[in-house]
Every structure is written in C-alpha cells, then in structure tokens.
Length: 486
Ligand code: PHE
Image 1 (cartoon, rainbow, N blue to C red):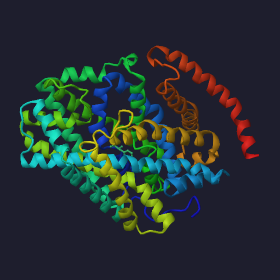
Image 2 (cartoon, rainbow, N blue to C red):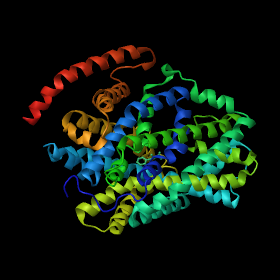
Image 3 (cartoon, rainbow, N blue to C red):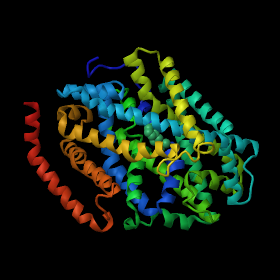
C-alpha cells in the first residue's frame, strides 16, 4: 500500500474518529488515576504541571501522532516505517512504533485489573455489598476485594475476554455507538455529583486543594508523574491514537480533532477531581491513599446522597464502559499489526494477543494478594508496569516522534497532513522541535537526579535556554537537513 491510499475501514460517522479517540482518552486515567495521583503529589502543583504538559507537550504530540498514523495508514510500526521511508530514512525508525505498541500492551495488562475492580464494584453496588459507615469500612471492603486471587482474577479475566471480543469484531461500530451516550452521560453524572458536593461540605477544601498552584512544592518525582500522566490520559505513545489515526479520512482536520479530544479529556479529569475530593475531605480521608482512593471514598459519598444507590450503579456502569473503550484502543495497534503483517484474521489476532495479555495481567493482579511481596526496588509487578510505561516509555516515545517530525522527516508530509496556516504550522514546528523535547528532557534530567530543578523559581532561566536552543537550532537545521538529504 502506498502512503496515500485509503484503508478499508475508515471511521463511519462525521464524529467517528473524535468519538473513538475521546473514548480512548477518557477512561480510568481520568477518574481513577488522576485523582489519586493528585492526592499523592499534593494537589494544585501537580494539577498545574499536568495542565502545562497537556498544552505544551500533549497537544503537539497528539497532532504529530495522528499525522503519522494517517500518512502511514497502518499499524504504528508500519506507519512510522512508511513515513520515515517516504523521507528516505531507514526502517530503524519504526523502533518508536515498536515501543509504543509494547507500551500499549503493557498498560493494558494492568489496566484490565483496575477495570476489573470497576466491574466488581458495579456488582457490589447492585447486590448491596457496599454498605458501611466509615472510611475504615470502605478500606476493608477494598482490601477484601483484592485479597482473593480467584475472584479478582475472574473479574480481570472477564474484562480481557470482553475487550478481545470487541476488538475481534472491529472497533469502529461498537465504540462509535457507545460513545454517543457515554460521554454526555458521564458529564451529566459528574455534574450531579459536583452540585451535590457544593451543598454538602468539603467542596471548598477540594477546590483549594486542586487549584492552589504552588509549583515549588512539587518533587521531581511529582514532576515526572505529571508529565507521564499527560501522556497516559491522552493515550499518547501507546499505539492507540496512531492506530486510530490510520483510519482517519483524509478530509478531516487533525488540529481540530486533537483540540476537541484534549479539551474533553481534561474537562472530565478536572470534573472528576471536583466530584471526588469533596467526599474525601468531608469524610476525613487521606488524599494520598493511593490506587484505592476512589473505590474507598465514592461508595461512602454515594451512601450519603439522595438516590445514591441508583447513582452509584450508574457511576460504575459508566466507569466500566469508559475503561473498555480505552482498553480496546490499547490493543488495536497489536491487532492491526498481526492482521497486516502476519496475515491473521482480526479474530485470531485478538484472541492470540488476548492469551499473552491474560498471562501478564494475571501477574499484575497477583500484586494485590499472593505476589504482594514479589517486589523489586520497592515496587511490585503492577507498579512496575505503570511506572515503566507512563514515566519513561511514553514520554520517550513522544520525544522520539516529535524530534523525527521536527528535524528528520520532510516537512511537506506534515504540511500535507496537518494543513495548518503558515503561522500555525510554524507554531507547531516550534513546539515539536523545541518546546516539547526540552520539556521532556528537563523533566527526565530532573528525575534522574542529574540536576535539581525548581521550575517555579527558575523558569526565566529555562525560557532563556529554550530561546537560545531554538535560535541555534533554526540557524543550524537547514544545514543539518541538507547534510542528511544530500
Ligand atoms: N487514556 C486512557 C485513560 O485515561 C488510558 C490509555 C493509555 C488508553 C494509553 C490508550 C493508551 O484511561
């Protein structure tokens, strides 16, 4: 297939891609992970860095990723390879495609465990298993839920099976149809929760916690976590957005799509924060309670709400659906690759990757019971999967693609795909060449302890360095390009 051919399975409706990409982006990351990380890293400072990373790194990286996908029209591995070859570069660059496919797979293997929690809680909500008057009661329910590897494993297995079933059938129709009610429904439900919280205590504290920006307070670990989460929540560098981009029709605007997805995703995360933290403060719970945070705080809040038991069921249905629409996107890259390159049918590709996934996810699930002390450097298997992917692989993948797009590949490819005005294109180039890479590298340097960074007070220096690098880079880059292209 040449780079500009149309693939068979484009998104159907006018909103097809936007819905699917939003379905991928909005998930456990927004409602489960964002609140507990914000809690762990101290609130407003984390939120501010996260928002800055979405704007300065996430959005340009997402545009770049979709452009790669649509230009290359294939699984991330093939898409990156084709786009590189179109600029006369070698196959080696498809390494970034490999890494993102692997990241998607690794994320999915712990994601199904958390999605399994969501299903288990849905079942408990229906069957009245979430009763209790205190945070301790809720912590006990959460603990019991995880203690038995057989039941916990059954839930994550169920998620794996459903995911593979959907992916085997092809993602387009199912996702598009579900997203139409899911997104508005989720927004409505979160609004109800926020309005309730406004009148029932803890709201003021929650707002202060989330939005009092004191950047100096953020540790280097928190800085890295905030950047990693920006990638995670936008589904970047995990094969998902690029694989979906491969099905994006030629006439759709990549920039508009990207902004729509990023805005929806960010709004839902912030709304989730505003819905969840009041309950945490009102019940005297520690915001830094870790991955169990929403599972321990929300059932308590729902019990106190009028119609709470019904709302709670609706909430866990939505959380589970949101998790599924993200889960299917994580494995799409692998399935696309297996069908394109190994000649498998979609079904065979889905089920065979499902088996490998199931094995890995079982190991991740065991981190909460039998394998709780199978740790390395203080982290269990579940934590390692999350840590390696979000903190390192995704930002590294994003860095690679941005630098490739900014310096290595022919600019016409991106002019063709992004179709921005002259000014907008220059802005995009500035972001992918300097702003995003420098941001990523700085945070890496800080995390590796090479240099201690306090962006809050040192930002003028960083700005100066950025300008110097950009000016030098622009002076050098035409020459660099000529050297490469001969
Ligand atoms: N963005 C999804 C979420 O926030 C997670 C995800 C990561 C999906 C990577 C696809 C790829 O839940």
